[in-house]
Length: 391
Image (cartoon, rainbow, N blue to C red):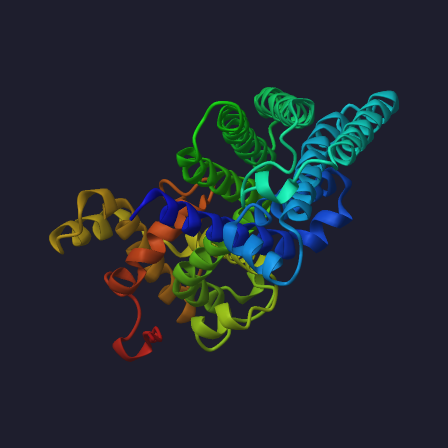
């Protein structure tokens, strides 16, 4: 694959990614002032990068839009993007004079570009404008344009990286660092573009297109960090709900007073039709499982944990799962004891469950199907053992 083909594919992918991120994050971002600036910055960058793609430019010119008009629009929106980056950076300072200064500077630069373009109205524009080339070959025009981009991206790089080292919000840290990485690529692009305009060759353009395409993907990623975090949290909650369900179901059936609501018939229903958001569901099941475990400690027999540990070792349970297997076997026996009406005794705390960590409970849940009936309840008749329903 040639550099041009790779740049085209990356460019198209970056456009799709940026517009997808913009649509997906539009509603939550526009409602929150601290995210609105980032969204608008990515929007301007998406428009500019879209107008940099040869396929898009070809469709516009085929529709009757002058190539010079496309290039000038791209340049102005690019400067707007750089200005919005600065506004996004200074907005956190909440200094009104600084924001007004940046806004005035942005307006001045865009006005200067339009004025310089109009002053160059007597040169044959279409003969000097290439698909991805300058709208105006004048030195002053491009000096203002490139300096505006370099200043905006340099400030974004410094501010984003330094602030990411001071904040404790992980979403914000990743958003800022990805934005800083995108600014690095933008700086490389504009330095390379300056070289292309005043001494380079057209062979550089595919590589510059590749850089600006990757820059667009990283800008989109910076916008999608909250969504990615939410998806990871939802997946973690789904995993906890799914893996903990058999243990939780059996324990809360034995100790129903700890549950806010009774389990559904299957765990598939529990995850497909949750009665509350998945994160809350996983948290509730964890707490209820631990509460039921504490209650069942009143039914633990002397030496049950050690007996379950020996049983698990004889059964070939791996060493790192022996503790969880012993806990599962002990709880299974205690659960059956309560179900058959055995009198409670002084609680016998089980080792390793003092704080009821999700990892510990998930370890017990993993061993629950194979260990729940491992230890017999010595005082129960054989036909009184409550069956454990399995899927």
